[in-house]
Image (cartoon, one colour):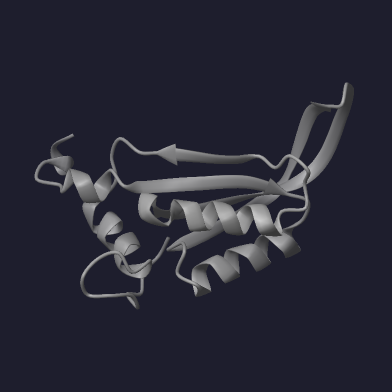
Amino acid sequence: MEVARGADRSLVGSIVEVTTTLPDDILADDIAEKMVEQRLVACAQVFGPVESTYLWRGALEQSSECRLSLKTTEGRLGEVIAMLRSRHPYEVPEITVKTFDWVLEEYAKWVHEVVGENEGGAGVVGNG
């Protein structure tokens, strides 16, 4: 990928996506808004509803849920997970973290600026 040449790998490589599922969009939107307001994440997307099928305590279950996707840095990951765990209504929530092989460098810089991990501080306006 020629576009990636010259990219700061330490900056780009530290961007992560945290995902979880929640029982409804009201809770997902509330968590997303609080995470962005507190600058724990640069952006959040709520998808859904999605239909989930899974085994729970030996029984086949199906439910309608919303998926919450959060973009942040490895440096903020512990705080993001702690907030999700404290606000999540499920006994065993799905919380996953994905790293990226490649991220547009300008996007990576924006994420770091928003969550306050880059000189220049927060307050940059952009699209997640």
